[in-house]
Amino acid sequence: MPELPEVEALKDFLTENLVGHEVVRVLPVAISVLKTYDPPVTALEGHEVTAVHRHGKFLDLETADGPHLVTHLARAGWLHWKDRLPSGMPRPGKGPLALRVALETGAGFDLTEAGTQKRLAVYVVRDPQQVPGVARLGPDPLADDFDETRFAALLKDERRQIKGALRDQSLIAGVGNAYSDEILHAAKMSPFKLASSLSAEETARLYEALRTTLTDAVERSRGVAAGRLKSEKKSGLRVHGRTGEACPVCGDTIREVSFSDSSLQYCPTCQTGGKPLADRRMSRLLK
Image 1: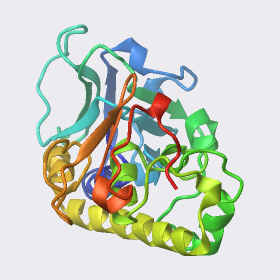
Image 2: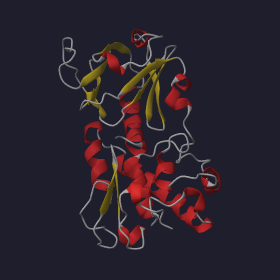
Image 3: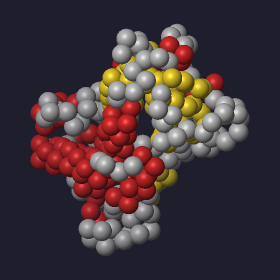
């Protein structure tokens, strides 16, 4: 799933390639991708793109005197830029293509989604706050006003494990499964530790890991072409998705805890005092 760093990089890429150009055609190939119907997608046509914004993991294309096109790529969605879009109409139901946006230059992009779980979402709205997922977002962790004091206040009453708290978009916007693993590894903290139990020193360490991990990932992604962002993300991860490999910090074997539809990875030596975590349903919170 694209998270804050990849969506930030896509925002920068689209700012460079879309802003100042006119949308001439929006083709929803998979109708299920559209989550709004008023205004219709055709309301975007004939309007110039004036800005591209990021709200957490949401991309927001703003047009002059027209609506916003807001999209969430979900777990298996992606954006593919094309300097020259194929001619002819795409055929519904053939392949992963969900929506196509064409510019007056002949360039544009496709939104695609692999797999059978169709969660890719596109909204055409007059105000991005009309998108429920955007309206409920917590603060952006890379915002200038997101300081350690504000972070500590968010965690103070959180009676949840820190892994789940970091992934809650209404608490902090943009962090998902992969980067929460990376942040906790950098902070040398168990994913099962209770958020409200953090000491001042632990909170400071976690805040520093949050900002540094995301900032470094954004910098790695900046300037990378849209098509290569997925591989760039994977190459920069130290523990997530690396079960069975050696921890790059201490050399211990990276372990995994599986859930119904996801998994987390961690290093026992760096994060849990050398103790492997059992299945989440049977594990105690590690202090």
